[in-house]
Image (cartoon, rainbow, N blue to C red):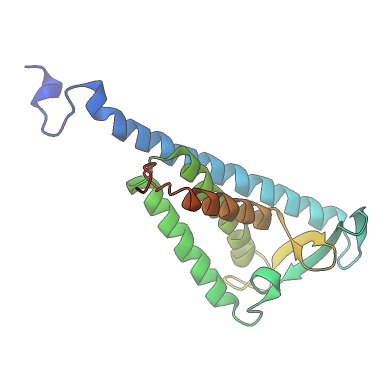
Length: 183
């Protein structure tokens, strides 16, 4: 008997180890998508802070999109303005839950992308909450993409919205986190 076969719980064939390697690959994909999302978000915020003057509107696509730097103390659409600690705590909880799911139940490549995008977007804005003025846990998020005067957001927000749309599409198709379909 080989040394590998002597160890308890060690798969005897590649087929038996496939779900574990698939789960590991999916968890890695979550981390890669998360890291790329955070990097792109933070680089664009750095650019906006460097090149845009606060409050000054720079038309990009006339009437639809413009660039306008603001600091957002609240959540989406500047809601919960005075509850920054609550918004921060909720975002931290969401990221922890996503990373737990990524390492325990995830076998779907699509959901790996979705979870990586949500976590990356949340972390992009959490970095602002923890590292920007006026202080730790209540920092203002850097927003600079003005959607026709309706609201101003950032790349992290775009990433979260794209993930939510993909999640809705998967849910409507009955696809579970493990990649199986509801009957």
